[in-house]
Picture 1 (cartoon, rainbow, N blue to C red):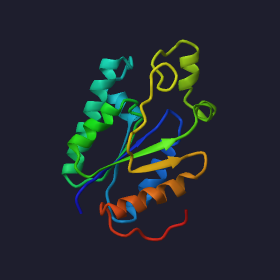
Picture 2: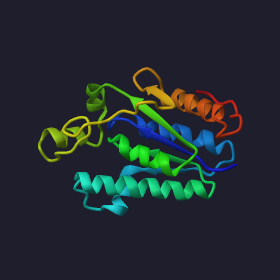
Picture 3: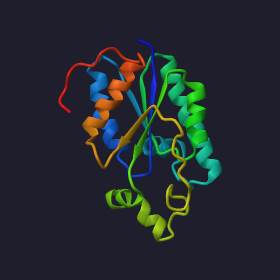
Picture 4: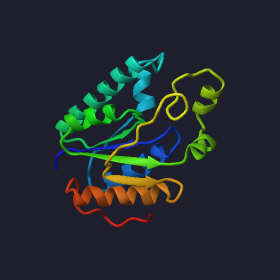
Length: 181
């Protein structure tokens, strides 16, 4: 089976990581060796003292997309767990990865702020960060995502099930085994 990529995008604290965590074992149940590229983990390596400037962000997302494209080219399914607040970042990844699915995790800004365990929004409100997507920096939602998830109306497990169904529909994966969710 050849590789593919799923990019989970949405505001910070919208539920992307929880959905990625629910999706991974479902893909692994199909005997797929999945790589989750979580932006915070990759950023610690690529930009250990991030400024989140527009130039740095553009370079970071180009590097993330390139890493994912290389994994996919070698047959590794990739789940991007990354806000990627500009469409251009995700469009670049799509241009590199033929079997690409964009999933938008929709969640009202106020709910994201209430869920924010990392303190991203609090740092922005306190003036410690000037580039928080959705606060000071715009978030550009996808225009035509393959899947839309309302994380206020469904659990991560249900969201993972919707993504699995879409992957099967696109013929990215074989039939998924039945799991609770």
